[in-house]
Amino acid sequence: MSKKQRSRYSLGYLISQAFKSLFRNGMMSVASIAVLMSCLTVMGSFALLVYNINYNLDQLGSLNEIVVYCDTDLSDEDVDAIGRRVRLMDNVNEEAVKLITKEEVLIEERQKYSEFTDLFDQMDQSGVNPYPDTFVIQYEDNNKVSALQMELEQIEGVHKVQCRADLAETIESLKNSIIFIFMWFLVILFLVSVFVIINTIKLAVHSRKQEISIMRYVGATRWFITTPFVIEGIIIGVVSSGIAYAIEYFLYRTVYNAVSVNYGMIDIVPFGELQNVLLIGFAAVGIITGIIGTSISLSKHLKA
Image 1 (cartoon, rainbow, N blue to C red):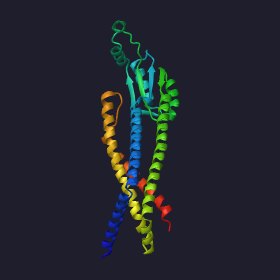
Image 2 (cartoon, rainbow, N blue to C red; image 1 turned 60 degrees about the vertical axis):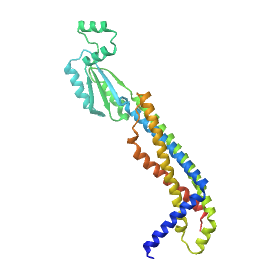
Image 3 (cartoon, rainbow, N blue to C red; image 1 turned 135 degrees about the vertical axis):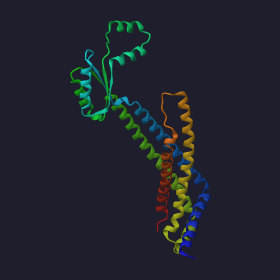
Image 4 (cartoon, helix red, strand yellow; image 1 turned 180 degrees about the vertical axis):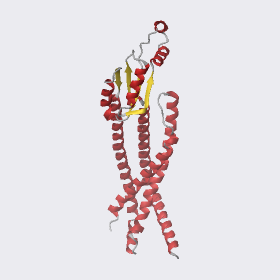
């Protein structure tokens, strides 16, 4: 028998031993898969929830905006001069400086308060527009927004500067808190999964204790003895991740359809944009958890 054939035979034997061990300890194997699958499903659901919360918070967009109201008696040239000066300021996204003229503001207000037609008719007759020209400015660095606000207030012809930096900081703090809680939650679930797999492998090692002793006696290498158990842990991880992914798919689709129909103001990221990352994440966490659980158990029960 060639070396290649022996290697192929050995690999087939090791894999077959892993499957035999899984079936031999059927209840604990099912328990391991069920617990790891549950942990992955909960972790995936929480991760998708956090992602969608952050997505909706980012959609607010206007949190990184400053609104500059000009004096109402400025000429078009004065307003243009203010716009040029604003675009040259530090921490200002030059391409995201938008001018809303007083005429545009008047049109918007007329549409918004259509029940007060007499008031707007009087404005038209007098030829006086009380609304100011307005600049909407997007800044780049939240840490420098206070300095930018002060600079804007010092520009001649600027009546008022409105900034929501405090709200932006509050939202950012909320996002960081959610991520922090999620990370600890993930660690706890990960440890629970590893604990259950360790106990599964313990039973497998105990049931094959005599066989392992004979294999050691005839000179089997440690690698040859431990590999079936490692493969067993990988199988548990792969099966768990596959089931968890299928459950997550149906759960997400159900929630997506329900929210889209009943809560149109909330944006849910389509599953298609997340499925690859979710599948890879489930597979990676499942396999790594299986390997770690197996390695810890073997280190305790298969000492040379």
